[in-house]
Length: 295
Image (tube, rainbow, N blue to C red; front, side, top):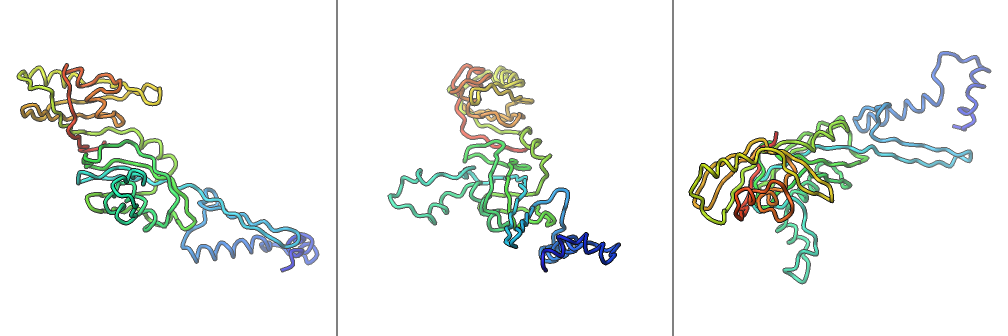
């Protein structure tokens, strides 16, 4: 169609006294919308679209199409039922055992939570560009149970449609991960939560007065202060108690805010207040800690 027809449409409609009919540009846009909806199964949201297409037509009929993708947020939760699984990927430079790097062998021996997340996003949701924001971490030998540790993924994709119901659970070799889409307003709330942590300590020496030990442990309830990037961070312990004592091994159960560096809280190698080793007036070593539940 010659562009003069729709550029001068008001003049033509006046000339032929055409009234009550949609204009040419509206008809073109309606046809395009119907084609997109029929082809993708997605409904077009004019207020908050996920992808915007800008079609620019020049006077010589040359044109360009630009796409602007909206960012998508995913709430994930992972559980670890087997020890020895790291949260993040190792870098290739850390593979010093072999002089020749073998990609397949590397992936097989070094599966992490991060690598499993990226596999799911790429293979299931067709998303290759993403950023993971962790809300906390743990040792690779720690278990993570209950509802699972939350994390956030920010991504964008031309192939994604929000009308599809994505709330799935994936499992692989001791890892369980679930995903769901969340809106921008739900992003802030996931970074603060409480967790129930079971800690196995090895004391420097055996303590005969278990009553005094229990009182000192219960006295850990309150604020915990430590430094992160030259900034003082405050978290809170809501409950602290002893589960069992076996010679020098003491098992604790702490209900606490996320973000407290557990090993630092136990050994106090970096400034933290309070510190279990200082409270008990003896060196304590963390054998392992497991996260039982998140609330």
